[in-house]
Length: 234
Length: 234
DNA sequence: TGCATAATTCTTGTCGACAAATTGAATGCA
DNA sequence: TGCATTCAATTTGTCGACAAGAATTATGCA
Image: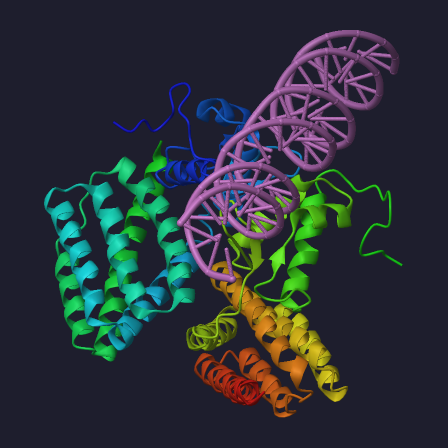
Protein backbone atom coordinates (compact mmCIF):
# COMPACT_ATOMS: atom_id res chain seq x y z
CA UNK A 1 0.00 0.00 0.00
CA UNK A 2 1.44 3.33 -0.98
CA UNK A 3 -0.28 6.02 0.98
CA UNK A 4 -1.17 8.88 -1.34
CA UNK A 5 -0.89 11.18 1.62
CA UNK A 6 1.57 10.57 4.39
CA UNK A 7 -0.40 9.84 7.50
CA UNK A 8 1.92 11.28 10.06
CA UNK A 9 5.67 11.22 9.87
CA UNK A 10 6.38 9.68 6.47
CA UNK A 11 9.94 10.58 5.59
CA UNK A 12 10.29 11.84 2.06
CA UNK A 13 13.43 12.44 0.13
CA UNK A 14 14.91 15.84 -0.05
CA UNK A 15 13.80 17.63 -3.21
CA UNK A 16 10.80 15.42 -3.85
CA UNK A 17 8.36 17.65 -2.00
CA UNK A 18 7.38 20.04 -4.76
CA UNK A 19 7.28 17.26 -7.33
CA UNK A 20 4.92 15.25 -5.16
CA UNK A 21 2.51 18.11 -4.66
CA UNK A 22 2.76 19.13 -8.29
CA UNK A 23 1.88 15.68 -9.57
CA UNK A 24 -1.05 15.20 -7.26
CA UNK A 25 -2.48 18.69 -7.70
CA UNK A 26 -2.13 18.40 -11.44
CA UNK A 27 -4.06 15.16 -11.45
CA UNK A 28 -6.73 16.54 -9.17
CA UNK A 29 -7.16 19.56 -11.38
CA UNK A 30 -7.29 17.58 -14.62
CA UNK A 31 -9.63 15.02 -13.11
CA UNK A 32 -11.91 17.80 -11.92
CA UNK A 33 -11.52 16.71 -8.32
CA UNK A 34 -10.74 20.36 -7.78
CA UNK A 35 -13.46 22.50 -9.27
CA UNK A 36 -12.36 25.03 -11.89
CA UNK A 37 -12.40 28.47 -10.35
CA UNK A 38 -12.16 27.21 -6.78
CA UNK A 39 -9.56 28.64 -4.44
CA UNK A 40 -6.40 26.77 -3.50
CA UNK A 41 -5.35 27.16 0.10
CA UNK A 42 -1.59 26.95 0.63
CA UNK A 43 -1.79 26.39 4.36
CA UNK A 44 -4.35 23.65 4.01
CA UNK A 45 -2.16 21.88 1.46
CA UNK A 46 0.87 22.29 3.67
CA UNK A 47 -0.93 20.60 6.55
CA UNK A 48 -2.35 17.93 4.28
CA UNK A 49 1.08 16.97 2.98
CA UNK A 50 2.84 17.54 6.25
CA UNK A 51 5.33 19.99 4.84
CA UNK A 52 5.98 23.70 4.91
CA UNK A 53 4.49 26.17 2.47
CA UNK A 54 7.68 26.49 0.46
CA UNK A 55 7.43 23.32 -1.64
CA UNK A 56 3.69 23.91 -1.99
CA UNK A 57 4.35 27.30 -3.46
CA UNK A 58 6.89 25.89 -5.87
CA UNK A 59 4.32 23.42 -7.12
CA UNK A 60 1.79 26.21 -7.54
CA UNK A 61 4.24 28.35 -9.47
CA UNK A 62 4.87 25.48 -11.85
CA UNK A 63 1.17 24.84 -12.27
CA UNK A 64 0.64 28.52 -12.94
CA UNK A 65 3.29 28.32 -15.64
CA UNK A 66 1.23 25.68 -17.38
CA UNK A 67 -1.95 27.64 -16.96
CA UNK A 68 -3.56 25.08 -14.67
CA UNK A 69 -3.94 27.62 -11.88
CA UNK A 70 -4.14 31.40 -11.99
CA UNK A 71 -2.44 33.50 -9.37
CA UNK A 72 -4.03 36.74 -8.29
CA UNK A 73 -1.17 38.81 -6.86
CA UNK A 74 -1.38 39.21 -3.11
CA UNK A 75 -4.69 37.41 -3.27
CA UNK A 76 -5.59 33.78 -3.65
CA UNK A 77 -4.62 31.34 -6.38
CA UNK A 78 -7.49 29.67 -8.20
CA UNK A 79 -7.87 26.49 -10.18
CA UNK A 80 -7.94 27.78 -13.74
CA UNK A 81 -11.49 28.10 -15.00
CA UNK A 82 -12.42 26.27 -18.18
CA UNK A 83 -12.67 28.78 -20.97
CA UNK A 84 -15.76 27.87 -22.94
CA UNK A 85 -15.49 30.96 -25.07
CA UNK A 86 -12.18 29.87 -26.57
CA UNK A 87 -13.22 26.29 -27.03
CA UNK A 88 -13.13 26.74 -30.76
CA UNK A 89 -9.51 27.83 -30.66
CA UNK A 90 -8.70 24.84 -28.53
CA UNK A 91 -10.27 22.39 -30.96
CA UNK A 92 -8.51 23.99 -33.86
CA UNK A 93 -5.15 23.62 -32.16
CA UNK A 94 -5.99 20.07 -31.19
CA UNK A 95 -6.90 18.99 -34.71
CA UNK A 96 -3.77 20.56 -36.13
CA UNK A 97 -1.57 18.76 -33.65
CA UNK A 98 -3.26 15.45 -34.31
CA UNK A 99 -2.48 15.91 -37.96
CA UNK A 100 1.06 17.15 -37.59
CA UNK A 101 2.23 14.60 -35.05
CA UNK A 102 0.74 11.69 -36.95
CA UNK A 103 2.25 12.84 -40.19
CA UNK A 104 5.68 13.24 -38.65
CA UNK A 105 5.38 9.84 -37.02
CA UNK A 106 4.76 8.30 -40.42
CA UNK A 107 7.81 10.06 -41.78
CA UNK A 108 10.32 9.87 -38.96
CA UNK A 109 9.46 6.96 -36.69
CA UNK A 110 11.80 4.08 -36.01
CA UNK A 111 10.48 0.53 -35.99
CA UNK A 112 10.79 0.22 -32.22
CA UNK A 113 8.51 3.23 -31.77
CA UNK A 114 5.54 1.18 -32.92
CA UNK A 115 5.67 -1.07 -29.91
CA UNK A 116 4.55 1.44 -27.26
CA UNK A 117 1.98 2.81 -29.68
CA UNK A 118 0.45 -0.64 -30.13
CA UNK A 119 0.54 -1.21 -26.39
CA UNK A 120 -1.43 1.95 -25.73
CA UNK A 121 -3.88 1.06 -28.46
CA UNK A 122 -4.45 -2.31 -26.82
CA UNK A 123 -5.11 -0.58 -23.52
CA UNK A 124 -7.49 1.80 -25.23
CA UNK A 125 -9.29 -1.10 -26.82
CA UNK A 126 -9.85 -2.87 -23.50
CA UNK A 127 -11.03 0.41 -21.97
CA UNK A 128 -13.60 0.71 -24.74
CA UNK A 129 -14.72 -2.88 -24.23
CA UNK A 130 -15.04 -2.25 -20.50
CA UNK A 131 -16.89 1.00 -21.24
CA UNK A 132 -14.57 2.67 -18.77
CA UNK A 133 -14.81 6.27 -19.92
CA UNK A 134 -12.05 7.60 -17.71
CA UNK A 135 -9.66 4.90 -18.85
CA UNK A 136 -10.57 5.69 -22.44
CA UNK A 137 -9.59 9.30 -22.00
CA UNK A 138 -6.30 8.39 -20.42
CA UNK A 139 -5.32 5.62 -22.84
CA UNK A 140 -6.41 7.62 -25.87
CA UNK A 141 -4.20 10.49 -24.79
CA UNK A 142 -1.31 8.12 -24.14
CA UNK A 143 -1.79 6.55 -27.56
CA UNK A 144 -1.59 9.82 -29.43
CA UNK A 145 1.24 11.06 -27.29
CA UNK A 146 3.22 7.94 -28.14
CA UNK A 147 2.64 8.71 -31.81
CA UNK A 148 3.84 12.25 -31.26
CA UNK A 149 6.98 10.95 -29.63
CA UNK A 150 7.60 8.70 -32.60
CA UNK A 151 7.53 11.89 -34.69
CA UNK A 152 10.60 13.00 -32.73
CA UNK A 153 9.84 16.69 -32.53
CA UNK A 154 10.06 17.75 -28.89
CA UNK A 155 8.41 21.11 -29.59
CA UNK A 156 5.31 19.53 -31.08
CA UNK A 157 5.22 16.79 -28.50
CA UNK A 158 5.25 19.11 -25.51
CA UNK A 159 2.68 21.43 -27.04
CA UNK A 160 0.48 18.49 -27.91
CA UNK A 161 0.82 17.10 -24.41
CA UNK A 162 -0.42 20.35 -23.01
CA UNK A 163 -3.43 20.32 -25.29
CA UNK A 164 -4.22 16.73 -24.40
CA UNK A 165 -4.11 17.65 -20.73
CA UNK A 166 -6.51 20.50 -21.19
CA UNK A 167 -8.71 18.20 -23.26
CA UNK A 168 -8.70 15.67 -20.48
CA UNK A 169 -10.33 18.25 -18.26
CA UNK A 170 -12.98 19.08 -20.81
CA UNK A 171 -13.77 15.44 -21.43
CA UNK A 172 -14.06 14.72 -17.71
CA UNK A 173 -16.52 17.53 -17.52
CA UNK A 174 -18.62 15.74 -20.03
CA UNK A 175 -18.24 12.25 -18.62
CA UNK A 176 -19.36 13.40 -15.26
CA UNK A 177 -22.87 14.10 -16.45
CA UNK A 178 -23.18 11.41 -19.09
CA UNK A 179 -22.13 7.82 -19.17
CA UNK A 180 -21.84 7.67 -22.90
CA UNK A 181 -19.19 5.55 -24.50
CA UNK A 182 -16.81 6.51 -27.27
CA UNK A 183 -17.73 4.47 -30.28
CA UNK A 184 -15.71 1.43 -31.21
CA UNK A 185 -15.06 3.15 -34.44
CA UNK A 186 -12.25 4.99 -32.74
CA UNK A 187 -10.53 1.71 -32.07
CA UNK A 188 -10.65 0.83 -35.73
CA UNK A 189 -9.44 4.25 -36.72
CA UNK A 190 -6.52 3.88 -34.37
CA UNK A 191 -5.62 0.60 -36.03
CA UNK A 192 -5.72 2.23 -39.43
CA UNK A 193 -3.52 5.03 -38.22
CA UNK A 194 -0.97 2.59 -36.89
CA UNK A 195 -0.95 0.77 -40.21
CA UNK A 196 -0.34 3.91 -42.26
CA UNK A 197 2.39 5.05 -39.91
CA UNK A 198 4.07 1.68 -40.21
CA UNK A 199 3.76 1.96 -43.99
CA UNK A 200 5.31 5.44 -43.83
CA UNK A 201 2.40 6.82 -45.79
CA UNK A 202 2.60 10.44 -44.71
CA UNK A 203 -0.28 11.75 -46.76
CA UNK A 204 -2.75 9.13 -45.70
CA UNK A 205 -1.61 9.26 -42.09
CA UNK A 206 -2.26 12.98 -42.00
CA UNK A 207 -5.66 12.56 -43.62
CA UNK A 208 -6.67 9.82 -41.23
CA UNK A 209 -5.54 11.77 -38.22
CA UNK A 210 -7.49 14.76 -39.42
CA UNK A 211 -10.67 12.79 -39.88
CA UNK A 212 -10.16 11.10 -36.57
CA UNK A 213 -9.63 14.37 -34.74
CA UNK A 214 -12.52 16.10 -36.42
CA UNK A 215 -14.70 13.16 -35.58
CA UNK A 216 -13.82 13.54 -31.92
CA UNK A 217 -14.32 17.27 -31.99
CA UNK A 218 -17.75 16.87 -33.56
CA UNK A 219 -18.65 14.33 -30.92
CA UNK A 220 -17.50 16.50 -28.04
CA UNK A 221 -19.06 19.64 -29.46
CA UNK A 222 -22.39 17.91 -29.80
CA UNK A 223 -22.24 16.81 -26.19
CA UNK A 224 -21.21 20.22 -24.97
CA UNK A 225 -24.10 21.84 -26.76
CA UNK A 226 -26.42 19.28 -25.23
CA UNK A 227 -24.99 19.97 -21.80
CA UNK A 228 -25.50 23.67 -22.35
CA UNK A 229 -29.13 23.15 -23.17
CA UNK A 230 -29.52 21.10 -20.04
CA UNK A 231 -27.99 23.83 -17.95
CA UNK A 232 -30.42 26.35 -19.30
CA UNK A 233 -33.33 24.06 -18.67
CA UNK A 234 -32.47 23.74 -14.99
CA UNK B 1 16.99 56.97 -15.46
CA UNK B 2 15.54 53.72 -14.36
CA UNK B 3 18.22 51.70 -12.66
CA UNK B 4 18.10 48.15 -13.93
CA UNK B 5 19.50 47.05 -10.63
CA UNK B 6 18.71 48.76 -7.38
CA UNK B 7 21.88 50.29 -6.10
CA UNK B 8 21.35 49.95 -2.41
CA UNK B 9 18.05 50.19 -0.65
CA UNK B 10 15.57 50.66 -3.46
CA UNK B 11 12.17 49.81 -2.06
CA UNK B 12 10.20 47.54 -4.33
CA UNK B 13 6.58 46.65 -4.13
CA UNK B 14 5.50 43.50 -2.45
CA UNK B 15 5.09 40.68 -4.97
CA UNK B 16 7.17 42.31 -7.70
CA UNK B 17 10.38 40.60 -6.69
CA UNK B 18 10.08 37.36 -8.61
CA UNK B 19 8.66 39.13 -11.64
CA UNK B 20 11.58 41.53 -11.70
CA UNK B 21 14.16 38.79 -11.55
CA UNK B 22 12.27 36.66 -14.04
CA UNK B 23 12.09 39.42 -16.63
CA UNK B 24 15.70 40.38 -16.36
CA UNK B 25 17.02 36.85 -16.24
CA UNK B 26 14.89 35.89 -19.20
CA UNK B 27 16.25 38.77 -21.23
CA UNK B 28 19.80 37.99 -20.24
CA UNK B 29 19.36 34.39 -21.26
CA UNK B 30 17.74 35.17 -24.59
CA UNK B 31 20.27 37.89 -25.36
CA UNK B 32 23.07 35.45 -24.60
CA UNK B 33 24.40 37.68 -21.85
CA UNK B 34 24.31 34.49 -19.85
CA UNK B 35 26.13 31.76 -21.69
CA UNK B 36 24.12 28.61 -22.43
CA UNK B 37 25.22 25.86 -20.10
CA UNK B 38 26.65 28.23 -17.51
CA UNK B 39 25.67 27.86 -13.88
CA UNK B 40 23.23 30.20 -12.18
CA UNK B 41 24.12 31.08 -8.63
CA UNK B 42 21.12 31.79 -6.43
CA UNK B 43 23.07 33.51 -3.70
CA UNK B 44 24.87 35.75 -6.13
CA UNK B 45 21.58 36.79 -7.69
CA UNK B 46 20.07 37.38 -4.28
CA UNK B 47 22.89 39.74 -3.40
CA UNK B 48 22.77 41.41 -6.77
CA UNK B 49 19.08 42.20 -6.47
CA UNK B 50 19.22 42.85 -2.77
CA UNK B 51 16.58 40.32 -1.89
CA UNK B 52 16.38 36.91 -0.31
CA UNK B 53 16.70 33.66 -2.20
CA UNK B 54 12.97 32.98 -2.13
CA UNK B 55 11.87 35.27 -5.00
CA UNK B 56 14.98 34.29 -6.93
CA UNK B 57 13.99 30.67 -6.68
CA UNK B 58 10.47 31.43 -7.85
CA UNK B 59 11.87 33.14 -10.92
CA UNK B 60 14.11 30.15 -11.59
CA UNK B 61 11.21 27.73 -11.26
CA UNK B 62 9.25 29.71 -13.81
CA UNK B 63 12.20 29.85 -16.17
CA UNK B 64 12.64 26.11 -15.78
CA UNK B 65 8.98 25.66 -16.74
CA UNK B 66 9.71 27.41 -20.01
CA UNK B 67 12.85 25.42 -20.58
CA UNK B 68 15.13 28.42 -20.34
CA UNK B 69 17.06 26.90 -17.46
CA UNK B 70 17.51 23.30 -16.41
CA UNK B 71 17.52 22.30 -12.78
CA UNK B 72 19.71 19.46 -11.65
CA UNK B 73 18.13 18.20 -8.41
CA UNK B 74 20.21 19.01 -5.36
CA UNK B 75 22.80 20.38 -7.69
CA UNK B 76 23.09 23.59 -9.62
CA UNK B 77 20.69 25.10 -12.16
CA UNK B 78 22.13 25.86 -15.57
CA UNK B 79 21.20 28.18 -18.37
CA UNK B 80 19.63 25.81 -20.86
CA UNK B 81 22.13 24.78 -23.51
CA UNK B 82 21.22 25.38 -27.12
CA UNK B 83 20.33 22.08 -28.66
CA UNK B 84 21.96 22.00 -32.03
CA UNK B 85 20.97 18.41 -32.60
CA UNK B 86 17.27 19.24 -32.55
CA UNK B 87 17.63 22.35 -34.61
CA UNK B 88 15.78 20.70 -37.42
CA UNK B 89 12.78 20.02 -35.21
CA UNK B 90 12.83 23.62 -34.11
CA UNK B 91 12.80 24.96 -37.64
CA UNK B 92 10.01 22.63 -38.59
CA UNK B 93 7.88 23.85 -35.71
CA UNK B 94 8.75 27.43 -36.53
CA UNK B 95 7.74 27.16 -40.18
CA UNK B 96 4.46 25.51 -39.27
CA UNK B 97 3.58 28.23 -36.81
CA UNK B 98 4.45 30.95 -39.29
CA UNK B 99 2.04 29.33 -41.72
CA UNK B 100 -0.75 28.64 -39.27
CA UNK B 101 -0.77 31.97 -37.52
CA UNK B 102 -0.65 33.93 -40.76
CA UNK B 103 -3.44 31.88 -42.25
CA UNK B 104 -5.64 32.35 -39.21
CA UNK B 105 -4.90 36.05 -39.19
CA UNK B 106 -6.15 36.27 -42.76
CA UNK B 107 -9.30 34.46 -41.77
CA UNK B 108 -10.13 35.86 -38.34
CA UNK B 109 -8.53 39.26 -37.94
CA UNK B 110 -10.50 42.40 -37.24
CA UNK B 111 -9.68 45.59 -39.09
CA UNK B 112 -8.15 47.19 -36.00
CA UNK B 113 -5.67 44.33 -35.71
CA UNK B 114 -3.85 45.57 -38.78
CA UNK B 115 -2.70 48.73 -37.08
CA UNK B 116 -0.21 47.17 -34.62
CA UNK B 117 0.98 44.83 -37.37
CA UNK B 118 1.78 47.75 -39.63
CA UNK B 119 3.46 49.57 -36.77
CA UNK B 120 5.79 46.67 -36.12
CA UNK B 121 6.50 46.33 -39.79
CA UNK B 122 7.50 50.01 -39.90
CA UNK B 123 9.82 49.44 -36.97
CA UNK B 124 11.29 46.41 -38.71
CA UNK B 125 11.82 48.42 -41.85
CA UNK B 126 13.75 51.15 -40.05
CA UNK B 127 15.81 48.50 -38.28
CA UNK B 128 16.74 47.04 -41.64
CA UNK B 129 17.64 50.47 -43.00
CA UNK B 130 19.78 51.12 -39.96
CA UNK B 131 21.33 47.66 -40.33
CA UNK B 132 20.68 47.14 -36.65
CA UNK B 133 20.65 43.36 -36.45
CA UNK B 134 19.45 43.12 -32.88
CA UNK B 135 16.58 45.49 -33.56
CA UNK B 136 15.68 43.44 -36.63
CA UNK B 137 15.38 40.30 -34.56
CA UNK B 138 13.19 42.01 -32.00
CA UNK B 139 10.90 43.85 -34.41
CA UNK B 140 10.57 40.87 -36.70
CA UNK B 141 9.43 38.73 -33.78
CA UNK B 142 7.02 41.45 -32.66
CA UNK B 143 5.63 41.70 -36.17
CA UNK B 144 4.84 38.02 -36.48
CA UNK B 145 3.53 37.85 -32.96
CA UNK B 146 1.11 40.65 -33.75
CA UNK B 147 -0.09 38.63 -36.73
CA UNK B 148 -0.56 35.62 -34.48
CA UNK B 149 -2.60 37.69 -32.08
CA UNK B 150 -4.79 38.82 -34.95
CA UNK B 151 -5.47 35.15 -35.58
CA UNK B 152 -7.05 35.05 -32.13
CA UNK B 153 -5.96 31.60 -31.09
CA UNK B 154 -4.28 31.84 -27.69
CA UNK B 155 -2.88 28.32 -27.91
CA UNK B 156 -1.07 29.00 -31.16
CA UNK B 157 0.03 32.44 -30.05
CA UNK B 158 1.66 31.28 -26.83
CA UNK B 159 3.36 28.37 -28.53
CA UNK B 160 4.60 30.62 -31.30
CA UNK B 161 5.86 33.12 -28.78
CA UNK B 162 7.91 30.46 -27.15
CA UNK B 163 9.42 29.43 -30.45
CA UNK B 164 10.22 33.02 -31.33
CA UNK B 165 11.99 33.41 -28.00
CA UNK B 166 14.11 30.36 -28.59
CA UNK B 167 14.79 31.65 -32.10
CA UNK B 168 15.93 34.93 -30.67
CA UNK B 169 18.65 33.07 -28.82
CA UNK B 170 19.79 31.21 -31.90
CA UNK B 171 19.85 34.34 -33.99
CA UNK B 172 21.83 36.23 -31.37
CA UNK B 173 24.32 33.44 -31.48
CA UNK B 174 24.75 34.07 -35.14
CA UNK B 175 24.82 37.85 -35.00
CA UNK B 176 27.54 37.77 -32.46
CA UNK B 177 30.04 36.36 -34.86
CA UNK B 178 28.80 37.98 -38.06
CA UNK B 179 27.53 41.42 -38.83
CA UNK B 180 25.44 40.31 -41.76
CA UNK B 181 22.18 42.04 -42.48
CA UNK B 182 18.86 40.43 -43.24
CA UNK B 183 18.00 41.26 -46.80
CA UNK B 184 15.50 43.96 -47.60
CA UNK B 185 13.54 41.33 -49.33
CA UNK B 186 12.06 40.44 -45.96
CA UNK B 187 10.59 43.91 -45.71
CA UNK B 188 8.86 43.46 -49.03
CA UNK B 189 7.63 40.03 -48.06
CA UNK B 190 6.20 41.45 -44.88
CA UNK B 191 4.31 44.02 -46.89
CA UNK B 192 2.90 41.35 -49.13
CA UNK B 193 1.83 39.32 -46.13
CA UNK B 194 0.02 42.30 -44.65
CA UNK B 195 -1.78 42.88 -47.94
CA UNK B 196 -3.01 39.30 -48.23
CA UNK B 197 -4.14 39.27 -44.61
CA UNK B 198 -6.08 42.48 -45.18
CA UNK B 199 -7.61 40.90 -48.28
CA UNK B 200 -8.55 37.86 -46.23
CA UNK B 201 -6.83 35.63 -48.75
CA UNK B 202 -6.15 32.62 -46.55
CA UNK B 203 -4.53 30.45 -49.15
CA UNK B 204 -2.10 33.03 -50.40
CA UNK B 205 -1.34 34.23 -46.89
CA UNK B 206 -0.38 30.73 -45.86
CA UNK B 207 1.74 30.24 -48.97
CA UNK B 208 3.54 33.54 -48.47
CA UNK B 209 4.19 32.83 -44.81
CA UNK B 210 5.58 29.46 -45.71
CA UNK B 211 7.94 30.86 -48.30
CA UNK B 212 8.96 33.62 -45.95
CA UNK B 213 9.66 31.22 -43.12
CA UNK B 214 11.54 28.77 -45.29
CA UNK B 215 13.57 31.60 -46.67
CA UNK B 216 14.61 32.59 -43.17
CA UNK B 217 15.35 29.01 -42.21
CA UNK B 218 17.53 28.54 -45.26
CA UNK B 219 19.37 31.72 -44.43
CA UNK B 220 19.97 30.78 -40.82
CA UNK B 221 20.90 27.21 -41.65
CA UNK B 222 23.47 28.40 -44.13
CA UNK B 223 25.01 30.66 -41.53
CA UNK B 224 25.02 27.98 -38.89
CA UNK B 225 26.79 25.59 -41.19
CA UNK B 226 29.33 28.26 -41.96
CA UNK B 227 29.82 28.90 -38.27
CA UNK B 228 30.29 25.20 -37.69
CA UNK B 229 32.98 25.02 -40.28
CA UNK B 230 34.71 27.94 -38.67
CA UNK B 231 34.60 26.24 -35.33
CA UNK B 232 36.23 23.16 -36.74
CA UNK B 233 38.89 25.19 -38.40
CA UNK B 234 39.87 26.87 -35.14
C1' DT C 1 53.24 8.11 -6.39
C1' DG C 2 48.50 6.45 -7.10
C1' DC C 3 44.11 5.54 -5.33
C1' DA C 4 40.49 5.03 -1.99
C1' DT C 5 38.50 7.05 2.00
C1' DA C 6 37.42 10.77 5.23
C1' DA C 7 36.73 15.52 6.33
C1' DT C 8 35.37 20.07 4.79
C1' DT C 9 33.17 23.50 2.17
C1' DC C 10 29.28 24.92 -0.77
C1' DT C 11 24.91 24.82 -2.55
C1' DT C 12 20.29 23.62 -2.33
C1' DG C 13 15.75 22.34 -0.26
C1' DT C 14 12.93 23.14 3.65
C1' DC C 15 11.28 25.33 7.66
C1' DG C 16 9.18 28.72 10.94
C1' DA C 17 8.44 33.48 11.56
C1' DC C 18 7.17 38.06 10.35
C1' DA C 19 5.17 41.91 7.82
C1' DA C 20 2.51 43.86 3.93
C1' DA C 21 -1.79 43.54 1.52
C1' DT C 22 -6.39 42.25 1.29
C1' DT C 23 -10.84 40.65 2.92
C1' DG C 24 -14.58 40.90 5.80
C1' DA C 25 -16.67 42.58 10.01
C1' DA C 26 -17.64 46.27 12.97
C1' DT C 27 -18.47 50.91 13.83
C1' DG C 28 -19.94 55.63 12.94
C1' DC C 29 -22.56 58.94 10.49
C1' DA C 30 -26.13 60.84 7.56
C1' DT D 1 -31.62 51.89 6.67
C1' DG D 2 -27.76 52.88 3.59
C1' DC D 3 -23.11 54.09 2.94
C1' DA D 4 -18.39 55.22 4.11
C1' DT D 5 -14.68 54.47 7.30
C1' DT D 6 -12.04 51.92 10.74
C1' DC D 7 -10.56 47.82 12.73
C1' DA D 8 -9.58 42.92 13.12
C1' DA D 9 -8.49 38.62 10.88
C1' DT D 10 -6.71 35.98 7.05
C1' DT D 11 -3.55 35.17 3.56
C1' DT D 12 0.36 36.00 0.89
C1' DG D 13 5.28 37.42 -0.10
C1' DT D 14 9.70 37.66 1.93
C1' DC D 15 13.26 36.75 5.08
C1' DG D 16 17.02 34.43 7.77
C1' DA D 17 18.38 30.09 9.47
C1' DC D 18 19.32 25.31 9.31
C1' DA D 19 20.19 20.72 7.54
C1' DA D 20 20.80 17.26 3.74
C1' DG D 21 23.58 16.21 -0.43
C1' DA D 22 27.00 16.99 -3.51
C1' DA D 23 31.52 18.83 -4.81
C1' DT D 24 36.03 19.57 -3.29
C1' DT D 25 39.87 19.12 -0.63
C1' DA D 26 42.62 16.68 2.62
C1' DT D 27 44.26 12.44 4.56
C1' DG D 28 45.71 7.55 4.93
C1' DC D 29 47.37 3.45 2.96
C1' DA D 30 49.51 0.47 -0.38
